[in-house]
Length: 115
Image 1 (tube, one colour):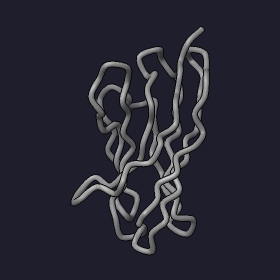
Image 2: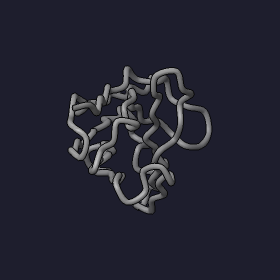
Image 3: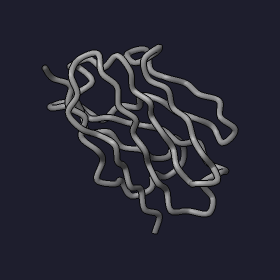
């Protein structure tokens, strides 16, 4: 069973930065498009950024220009660099596939943006 282990969250002030990591335990990682999702309090889970196996990316309008997704296929890891954080970015952040049947969701990593 594929495991997803997200890390790097925390408490940050508005305008601050965080870098999230997601380690994916599958030998097929380099062939799959991956995404970062988030679920804020009382909200549904949403896709915020996605990346193809070769590094092409798409980010949601809400985070465009502030968040950058990247990957290291040699380390089976996908990253989310988050800059200029806003209180509305507060959420639990998850990674997973963006097509096909989802892997079992990991525990996520909590990001809280507050002064």
